Amino acid sequence: MVSKDADKMSDVLSLVLRYGVLASATIIAAGAFLFALHSPYQDASFLTRYYPGRVPHGSYDTSLWSIATGLPSLSPYSVVELGFIVLLATPVLRVAFSVVLFATEGDRRYVYITAAVLLILLFSLFVTPFIPAFGGS
Amino acid sequence: MTPQTIPRLSGMSVIVERGAGQEAGFPDSAYEKAGASMVDDAGSLYEKTDVILKVQPPLPAEAQLFRQGSILASLLHPKSNLDVVKELDLRGSYTELDGSLVEYNATRPKAGLLGMLAAGMISGLLGIGSGTFKVISMDVAMKLPMKVSTTTSNFMIGVTAAASAGIYFVRGDVNPFIAAPVAVGVLIGASVGTRLLMRARNPTVRKVFAVVLAASAVEMIARALGV
Image 1 (tube, rainbow over the protein chains, first blue to last red):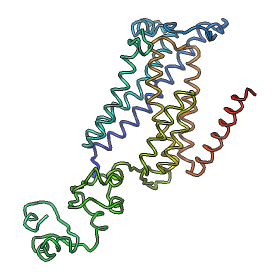
Image 2 (spheres, helix red, strand yellow):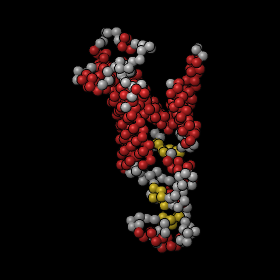
Image 3 (cartoon, chains in turn yellow, green):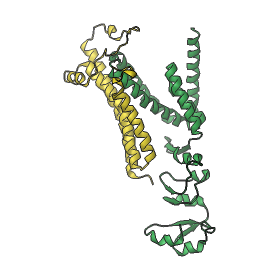
């Protein structure tokens, strides 16, 4: 007696994953393409050089504002970063949707478990970067 | 349920297992008179009903008979009958490409939990793929089908990796010029792998897993010896 709604919800869940991954891959690939377009002959190896002695905190500006302002001019950097944000948001969205799915199924225990997973995810994404004990700023 | 309650359940058809009320002083004839239809064994009852009313907790064999989504009202004694309760929860099904439905139960959830703990600690300590240990503990301890183990492990990695990757990203540690080609390559590879998995059979998946496991073990030993 699984309800039609629950069936629909699990379809929504797989769509969230599928399109989230597809969208992020497309955006990241577009960003990489734009980068190649902007500097076709430039030696880009300095960008990918690895400095083992240096902790790279804050080397790359990931504030939403800087990404958003770079988008209208199709800055390759902003486009790639947007793709990463979509990629990171996909599993989080998937977990958030499963909370709703379990709620529609009336499965309380799994609503609690999934909500706890979601809270831990959101905590580590949005809170830990600001806590010194977690190595944040 | 007593025969008296049956007429009150208007719009519902009631099926009673033969002899179910005998011991409590309600003969089959009383149920039949009240409008219930009788069946000989519990098995066919589970097949037909959406709501199951029982007094005692279901036996493990009965738990296997429940249809997905059916409702059970009975005593469960959750503290004393952990195995049955877990059996009710830790089960699932998936559809193979040929349309056949594969149903499965998880066994030994405690051993599975310990395996997962080891997976988390070893991957945190050594930085090696916790997926390997997750697949092993789901396959060996919980006896899930190989495809279920690999896809579940994959999904868990996705969720846990989102947490740690997000932290690196927010701190500005991620070099987009290295990560972009890696991400595109991995995403293409992952979607090809997913399609292959749908076509593959469970024993084949297990063999591929074994080869990859052996290869990474050899590589780690070689690295530890400084070869």
